[in-house]
Length: 273
Image 1 (cartoon, rainbow, N blue to C red):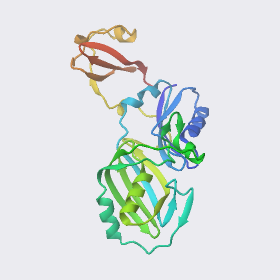
Image 2: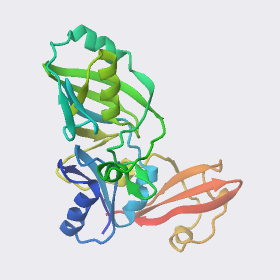
Image 3: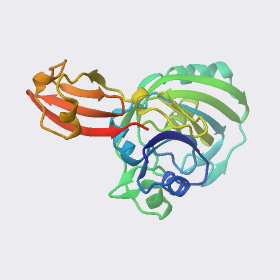
Image 4: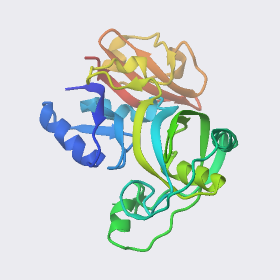
């Protein structure tokens, strides 16, 4: 069974555990997801079944759009509503000051991912190590903020919608914004609304050809060559330049790479459902 769709992950469950639920729901043993959501977060999670699990490297998942709520005055080691160690009652902030601070963070910014995250540390999720009290360090990374809109502010809760590139951590962004404002803050909720063109539509099965982010090419030879996995000549394609290409047929598609006048299969004969 091949399928590509979006699920709405609930809070308080890891992406892996939720995937196990999906595997029991649909008749397949082979399933995967792209774009891990931490247990604290909910929302859009891209699921692939069968041979479509091989497509994650070829689909566009940017920008990622989230809706998040900051709890101003609360302090948490994990940057969310768990592990809250301190709550300070603060006077409301000026909305113009908040707007100036969040506008100053547009573009590329440097950050350190939260220790309570799904980052992989030698085969173990960072949040598991953090909960176990294991000491470790995460390297600084870069994220790009495309846009950020204040949805509403009812002190001490500030809700915003933010559009970012892949690999961004909204909890880290919230900590940076809080520092700009001179306060402690933590996220009280986080929901991913979409990833690229992917959004939750009641687990509707999607056509992968609508989401694969590759240039198309045309094979000029015999269709049976590709069906049988035969070695192909680069001159048998309409476009002969080096690159990775999507080759579409009526009932299946293939992904090939042309490099130095040599053709190799990245994925061959993936059936359309």
